[in-house]
Length: 484
Image (cartoon, rainbow, N blue to C red; front, side, top):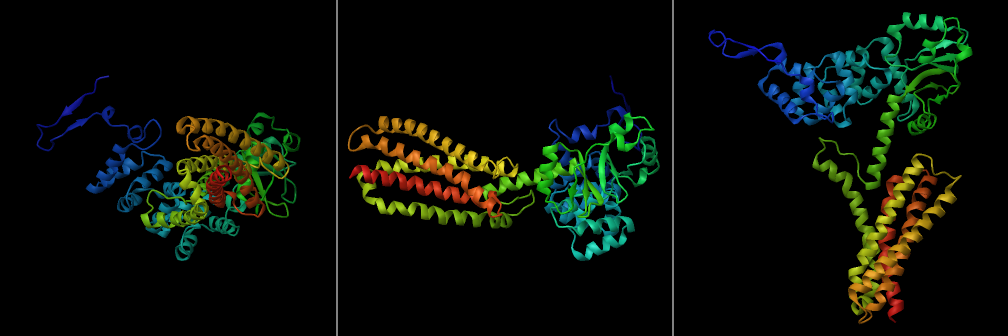
């Protein structure tokens, strides 16, 4: 299709060629790549509009995106440019964007947003998302925002904030659809149509309750729409899996995954229905818990895109210092065997290899154990079998590596000057260290979990120390026994 333009250069009022509507760029397609990541050119367009003070163009660019993409855009902009973008965001849209922001950026955006604007934005969110945002405010601004909100929204948020962090009560939304068990399908559908403004934005089930408002069943919307109007809810409702308000969010995620739930009712200790949790919230919990475990295994904390050098150093240096202490202890045994090293210098070359292989084997076992504990695949019911399995794997891997490394050592160093014994020394040391790695990798997280500690946090340091110490000590001890 050809594109026509109207040449207005002869008109003294104009000096540009104005394109027809078909030539106007599709900002949404321009902004996102095939992988749904923001294109660098689009980010530069936003920065350029901010530099020129072109508010209309800046609004046009930003409003071409979905809220999640605007939140991503904020991460690519400096603090100064974020202050330019915030005023062009509609309050009805701002709440969704704030809910999607990384924690470190959210605090900055909240501080830059007027309390009245923020209150209006949060009223557009479900109670769980609004409570999550309110919780990040300082006490003064929190009071201002809550005071500016509608009474019903304020009460829902304050109730959510009364529950412990990372529990079902904090995670749930107070908006849900419930119907008495004596209602029919037709009555329920009519109620939904009449109460549209007071229902949650997204819901999947109708919770059937008894006179005490305790859930006795649930009815998927698909079932509601495919049954006859005169059908009683009690005849077609399905069993319901209840979540208590004080249940840990990780336990909630496990239940959703195990029973393939899309939503679940949340009840108080007496059984009264007070809210619901939907799968979109659980996806976020699973992601957060997985990120925490991965970072904990490495001994670091999350460093957002705007984190500064000092904060990152503070989070990582203590673990490195602890690792330095354990490594120093591990190699201290080398001093005891200085004579063996002087007698057979090749030991100094082979010790790091044995230690490194043990460390990698320990990390493999540790990663599997931490994941199994988090997903409840490893419990007291099958701990003995899993431990024996990992120890067997350690023995098999150790013997295999001993054969390969022993052969390579013999071929490389040859039989002269005790070098014929190097293959035996390295082989036995590898078997000992790989087996030790299996023991530490499976037992360390089990022991920490038994003590009520997070197995992902401290296990890696312990296993690294164990494999380093065993790697050096085993090589030198076996050498001392064979060379004398």
